[in-house]
Picture (cartoon, rainbow, N blue to C red):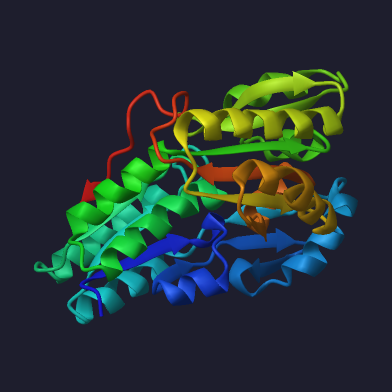
Length: 300
């Protein structure tokens, strides 16, 4: 067993196989719909995404993991003599990171010999998840906490998420779109390409149709692969799976020159974005245009 327990939140969009294989503990976020609260990790994502387009007039909300669940995850590790590396959804997108830091401080007071690192990844979905995966792989190799942090940070700097929503309605209702907010102040029929810069959603391009945006994403991905190499890539989707599989097979895999995973985005993210298609990828080298300053973990 590794001396470092890796923890993340479910917004990282890691599937159950990844979590089990790399011994990653996940804190579930919640989707609130029609007066009911659904634990994200137990939701039927296929069924939910089959009908997400119909929810535009009554968009569900989301909430973070409870303080109690977060504390229990940290205490479980401390009682086993394991330090904790925890990578979370960006703090400008959710209060999860700040809450986790508060809890970690309290747990540290109870277990003085316990050590932990909380990392604000500045992103979500597998753009968050790739950093967590890198830390978990390092932990299984026996890397100490500080090394797990350094590897995760470099991965965050070397990954990128590009996506395009089919409609701006969900983004407008969710209100968590940072510098992209100007897009929804009018009724222009555009399909933006969105990415993350300094922990906020940023516009990477604007095109008249969804198909043109998707085509441009593939070109941007190809440009980055040629310049910075490729470690891994995943086609991400919100809504039906079939278009994502087709795009992965016909467009993305020829660029990657390897099979790529096709995974749904976390429903907590999905309810803020709505039906969308995109890609997240991890390159060999640090990518420009994602952070002004590198993310830095908070150690306890």
